[in-house]
Amino acid sequence: MLDPLDVQRDSITDRVFDEIRQAIVDRRLQPGQRLSEAKLASMLGVSKTPVRETLIRLEHVGLVEPGPGSGLQVVQPSVKVVQDAYEVRRGLESLAAGLAAERASDDVCSKIRKAADEGLACTIASDESGRRGADRILHTLIATGSGNTKLAADIENYYVLTWALRQRDVPEMSESARCGEQHQRVAAAISDGDAPAAQEAMAEHLDTLRERVLAMLETAQPEEIFS
Image (cartoon, rainbow, N blue to C red; front, side):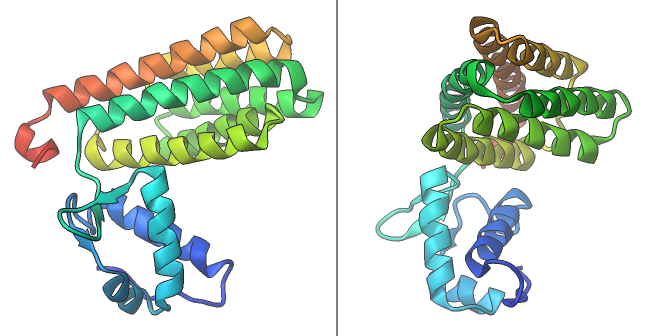
């Protein structure tokens, strides 16, 4: 189910986090599956400490939840969970876009525009891996460009949550050119120093994305999405 990790590379806790998160996305760890620190540690070839730290972080992010009785389980597919996550992300990232318009350096603004352009180009070329990478860079740059480290940390958690749930529960959903064009409007507003326009453009983008994800969830076969 999970492969042993090379404990000499990078931060072991970060490696454990990435592996367990990906296992949730891939459904190697099934929705509703109870999670045992000892079993996960044994499969990964690590001590229980980084696994315990990872499960605490994943519960904070929202990818694991308390199970019946005691212990944790993988979060179940849920329209409510997805809707809540995108609504919070909308509020956080709209604020960040407005602050970035006021605070981001010319260099950061240039990198945001570049990421927006690359993301749209990859979408048009059906390069999903490239688009996903550009999307990650753009949203991270805007979060850090806000100059608010606590806000950026919360955005990171909700980005991880929405990305993971989308990849797990609606993996067939492709990106639309409309979202790429919205990224460009956000980037342009930030570069222009127009905080209200940046906030509005980011809110519109995340509303569009939330509506597309929810529409696919709600029209999916119940046995596939909610079993």
